[in-house]
Amino acid sequence: MNNKIKKEIDSNLEKSDEWKGELIQTILDELDPSAFERLTQRLLRESGFVEVEVTGRTGDKGIDGKGIARINGILSFHVIFQYKRYKNTVGSKEIRDFRGAMDGRTNKGLFITTGKFTRGAVEEATREGASTIDLVDGDHLAEKLKSLGLGVKVEIVEIEKVIVDKNWFKTI
Image (cartoon, rainbow, N blue to C red; front, side, top):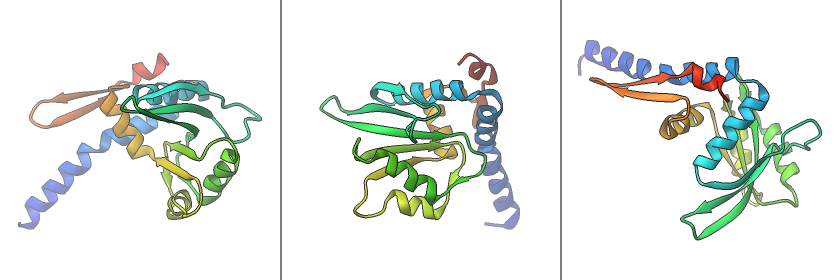
């Protein structure tokens, strides 16, 4: 493949993911903390969770919410979640603190951020012998919102075009 074609393909791939940055920036700019809580709650409900309760507030001891994940209507388990509207990264300290808050409540956690996780955070979340914490970073969050059609529309002309509906986020 010649360099000109490769550069064009790379440019098209970068443009195809620009919507993710726009979506995360919209969440950071347009949603106050309570709206972000409602968005997280809706995301989890539409992903199959039941009895989703947002508990995040001052003095929440590191727990922003809890719910029950249902798998194929047969299996269910309690999950505690933490969410952070971050521009930057979530490190291993935040994961350790969250795991400590989970202690004695459940052995399954979910940490959602608009930012990214450091390598240390990923290693801590999957550390052998410790309660598992699943991680959802900004890219994964954007993809999930897109797949559920929450604040994101997809138009397919010649190529897929993803449009962030900023007005939708103002209604949360």
